[in-house]
Amino acid sequence: MAGCLSLLRRLYLTAYNWTVFAGWAQVLSLALKTLNESGHENVYKAVERPLQLAQTAAVLEILHGLLGLVRSPITATLPQISSRLYVTWGILWSFPQTQNHILVSSLVISWSLTEIIRYSFFGMKEALGFAPSWLLWLRYSTFLLLYPSGITSEVGLIYTALPYIKESEKYCLRMPNKWNFSFDYFYTAILVLGFYVPGSPHMYTYMLGQRKKALSKSKKE
Image (cartoon, rainbow, N blue to C red; front, side):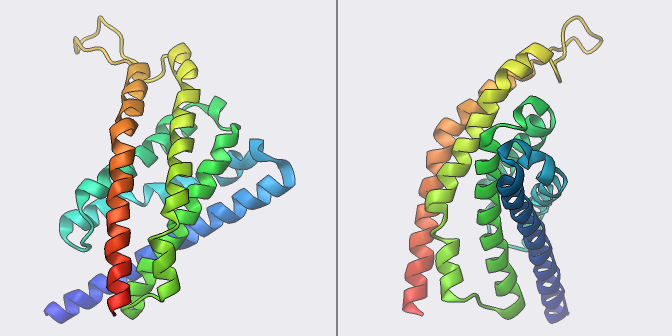
């Protein structure tokens, strides 16, 4: 019974990782093609739907952690997925004025490269039981550049959206109302920006630790 469950787990995670890998590969392909043919202003329009699908699929990774299907700690997974979903839906989708910004291109490329490497790494580990050394090195080294470029793009796009958030009052709830509660999305966005200040260095330090551990283990093997 245990062996059957283990096989089902591997089959599911293999299918999940390679499916999301394909989604991010499509995002990167469309982004590069659009950049080459018509410029950064049209990148978001070209990648919108596959980007939303690929990024939202990451919600399942929180469930994977809660169910014990993977070893990744929720404390590391949840903040990263949450911030990306916020930028994907709470900024880019919600405020179209941000969609033609050049930072969309750097965001999409940084996210895509990161996820193509990550999902192929885990896809191979689940399918074959191992991943080649060059892929392991990419998995634990490319974040050195891609994480700062991705975070810079996320912060820049949230900041760019602030005047549009304030002007539109979208998602705001004003008093008086039957719930006797008010909510201001503009200040929520500022609060989210504030979380990046301690959160980004903490996550970068965590990933440096993971890199050292993974590469030193690889050398021993």
